[in-house]
Length: 115
Length: 115
Image 1 (tube, rainbow over the protein chains, first blue to last red):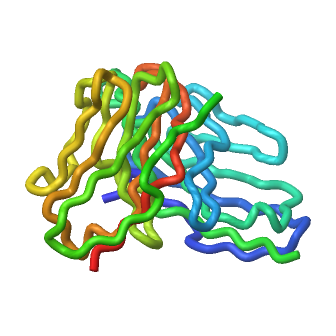
Image 2 (image 1 turned 180 degrees about the vertical axis):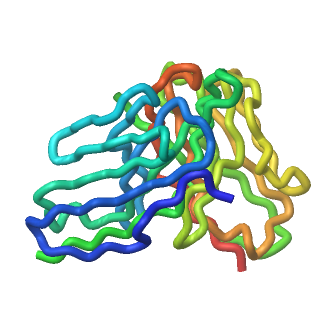
């Protein structure tokens, strides 16, 4: 089964609105990463948050991490039509205190931003 | 900085045939990943290399899939014989070092269709 599960599976909003996507995971992690995938293209890294961090910003992106609840959220503010894509969270699993760098992806959230 | 290079971009084969994919990671990246992404799903890790050694291949169908990383740089993924359910995009990614909290960079992928 997938380590990370995104919610919702699909999100449709108007340009200018904010988009929030959530990710839940099951085991201890070293870090959690968010990626974007445009139709038919490779994945692009958006942001990485370490297990000892609670919030991180990058431009219009804000990521939070709650390790007690094993969950993370990605907020895109003032969305644009160009933000239309699939968004995936990926967890770098921590097994026994050793960082393996094994990135496990969720099923993704399909975001559609209407002009 | 050059990105992760993959070839071919597209491949159509008949079931029971063999196919090979090639990946050239970013120069200096010790960790290399192969993922399988079936349409509508998140990427699934097939194998992870650290330099030329295998770190994780727990989800690699070893009866038909094989992978190697030559001299810790380029990598090839082979399927022999292919099945219809192998139709997917095969993504290669690399990161600086799995032991550090660094992001992975993905290639554009190879879209395989098995008919």
